[in-house]
Length: 308
Length: 216
Image (cartoon, rainbow over all chains, first blue to last red; front, side, top):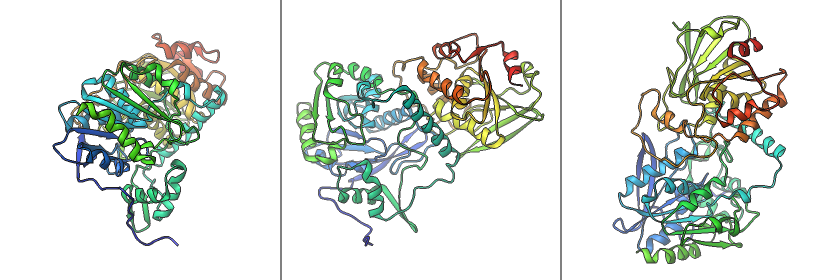
């Protein structure tokens, strides 16, 4: 029997202490902050189909160690505006707008998954934005692409194309399917099989909105996993090699996690920037900062200690 | 003078579809280059086409609306053309420059609704080249209604166009098409993606008017 209680708590989860918004060329991005507003800034960039409140446990851990943690929702995600168009380069530009609105000085940047991959692009073009960069399982590599032949790859791309265009044709009719808290959490479970239902139910209460029909994820219904386009994971490695700021990369080695690029240590190590550090954990899934929050927070804080 | 113009709805934006010539049968759809807009009158080189001649202003161009904060991709603008296909049914496409690139993509994605595509010279044919160009990230002021949208010019002149990616779309078209030569290259300027398309065994090359006539 589903609970009628519309709130959920999760051990260690803490709502942002301050909220606000950023203007990215007329598009409003929702901003969340934890920690002392006068402390040095560490900005967190979430991954695809996530939102900044997925840092509700991890961010307070960093904030409690003396950092002002700032995170924003990507366009179409969380509490940010839905856009008419979406794309990797638009997200990268939104990150620039957010960072420039937060600080005119270099700050520490941390990105998870797609957010980490996008920061690689941004910092290759704008290296002066960051005094250090932490990348949590957001290091795409061509070596880890699924082993599919050309015909199968084309078939997948073609199916993706048709479904993407169909979805855009119907975009004015689309809405996220309503459900109970438990139902939405259960539907998210296949993306997050290593995370507890307790956490996923908490996520519903901060990442979905409630109306007369139930809870619906806030993410723009026109967005879907995968997308299409010519982007290749290996292009990111060129950006990685070009970095010059202190760098910590953390890879999940769990190969059967449905999310993430599955890059291995040996795929990435040759492209590390000088002095760059790479950690590889074959027992932590793609959502490292959620699955092992304390361990990953301590790793990040230890890496950042010389920069304080 | 444009014969007539109507607006098609694409999400929250309006797309301008111009009818440059009336007629019976399958329309010829003209897709302009980057930063351009639809011609105000029927181009001379379409005179061999007896059916309707249409021209679409891409999002952020001509009489079409400008979105907030860009986000342009060629794949995203396929939905502009798809809005025409949904409204008017099957068409034959002539694309100039950037319009040729989008024309190829949408012809591959909607093979049952695109009966032939002609790839011709025009602005924005190269894009960002075969590999991503040097990263250039900049935030522009909110563009409002400025056209062509500065974000369109920025983002659609930097998108990578790998030849093998273009050839995927060639395969989609050739595998499905009931036309003997559904892709015709009339362009003289050949960036790498277009050179790869032109050299494919299933693609032919013809001067523009002959290319259009081959689909008439």
